[in-house]
Image (tube, rainbow, N blue to C red; front, side, top):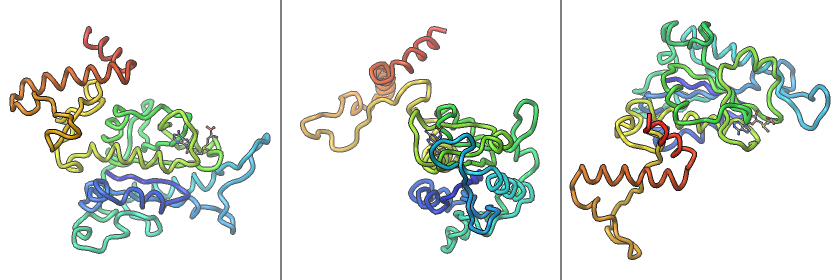
Amino acid sequence: MNFHIMTLFPEMVMQGLNTSIIGRAMDKGLINIEAVNIRDYAYNKHNKVDDYIYGGGAGMLMQAEPVYLCYEAVKNRIESGESDENSVSNNASAGDDSKAESNTASERIAISEDDISTEINGERRLRVVYLTPQGEVFSQKKAEELAKEEELILLCGHYEGIDERVLEEIVTDNISIGDYVLTGGELPAMIVVDAVSRLIPGVLNNDVSAEFESFNEGLLEYPQYSRPEVWHDKKVPEVLLSGHHANVDKWRHEQAIQRTKERRPDLYDRYAADSKD
Ligand code: SAM
């Protein structure tokens, strides 16, 4: 899967994603992430991409044109299967053997017309997610939906946001990571990339789809324990040491229900209603 992150701070995004599980997935060529600097598409000599807001009010707004030109460049590259030499990507840092084995950006984005678009209102469109506090709150379900895409463009705003006119033209999904306001869309974009990437086969060592995790089946995960058996006088529940798989499964399921009821009554009510159905 290929992520294209449109941002004013490409290094911030790549530094945040280039470690641990996501970094290894990039090295293995399971995912490809490029961060494209919107400022490279500024059309004035000072590389300015923001301006005052019509009608007054505090702060500055990202202008439509640089965002649009950046989007057009990313879209054209996806469609032609070329890579951007100026963008910061996992392939840009390829140096060691494991990285050399991974696909190049141009190899990975050379895909068929069918793969690069999604159907929205009967129209085939490239999926463009704008990270915004005004969007649908991000969920595991949304991550599962986005993981089906081959190409995903993520647009990060800054300052007071982005001129509405370009959003109307290019954005297919508005996603918020919660009801609070951040300074920029970079952290939300990293969260989306992380949650979606771990659903790509091979990114995690275990098959995550086969595992019970929070939000699978509409429940939170049960409590878990590792060695030692006794820590601070607290003993691991006996059933987990019994080796009796059916009893372990039963205990975990009950614990998942109990935990969800206590910590997320909203989720529990939905689960209870669905179970009745
Ligand atoms: N003026 C905007 C409003 O009131 O809706 C907020 C702009 S915010 C200061 C700047 C940028 O940060 C936004 O364009 C968006 O990309 C990002 N952002 C802030 N909070 C976010 C959230 N909860 N979820 C996703 N993106 C967020």
